[in-house]
Length: 141
Image (cartoon, rainbow, N blue to C red; front, top):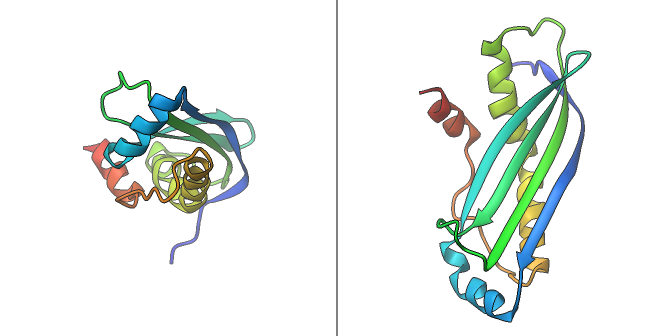
């Protein structure tokens, strides 16, 4: 196993939201939640002293965005300290887009499933595990 060239200094929920605006929306969402999909977006913001904030945005919603029924979103922030000798985009990019998200994703998924459950939608499962290696490869091509 290769040595990690970063350290996670802290992680927190930056923003979390569950919206079901009325009983009709609740019933609709409950009946259609199996059609909902998980969308993930990753943003990185450099901080000083070889640190960065990696924000992992997860949205769970219907494919068509005109849906105003049930909508769930979370932004999970991770503060990362990069080793001194890491200084090229080739090394930094996979840390931010692949390594850090892979490391914290189990927590993100648990928080998100708890959010759905407490929002009235228990027993939701994400049909596929998120593979950040694949997402990263896809982004590069």
